Length: 326
Image (tube, rainbow, N blue to C red; front, side, top):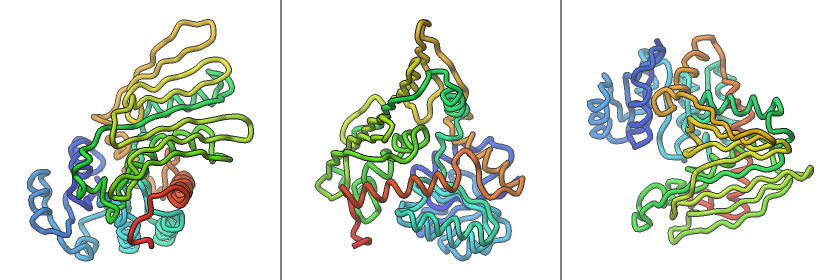
């Protein structure tokens, strides 16, 4: 039984702890927040035994084996590196960091300290998502030529101080939801040869919507869309020379696939998630740590670095840039 601390007390931290409460190979016992009042309230809600407002004190606690970092984006990399240097295993909410160099630095710290580290992209731990990739790779829909994916919801744009709209907290659509369809395209096709984009920046300076067309030298294409100001279908479809497969909404945590194959009726494939899906990820991470592994193949260090490279390039090309980066 690995003993975990959660870093951060926001919505993501709360949802994650609720989802993994019944996982038997890891247990949360502590929380950190820069506000002791918030840390204590979170600890009471989730039946944790320790609350800290001093990060170094938490990292010095010998009763903590690993930390799950669910703070705001700019804190991910420095908090992860500090935890790894303190000898803790680390699971970091996406995005791992705000640049390729920062992401590489986190994994260098994991290698140096021989501690587990992974970016928490829960989609890749979904058994149905893994089944999809195995069957596509085996040629069920032939040679894959096109991919489409969307992710969008209507956030209240008047909440200008919300972290999603706050440039000081690395807000915007790309780093919160856009990286999901991008991750899918990179997983299926790899890094694109060319990208066309229309990125919409909102009044606070962060991106609120984008349409991307990724092109490859061999003719493959991926059309991706993400928005914070409108609901999108949040489905994904992969198309090939012998058919197509659609990931039902929400595709990033799907439990149903529709397969359309040439000359055959459309068929459905169903899967079961552990609760909402974070449980699959948490169980796998605990198993990997127990086996002495530093990484997981489902979302490798190389996968995280490639994703960070593309996200950084997109932001440098079309925005947004954040005040602490200027």
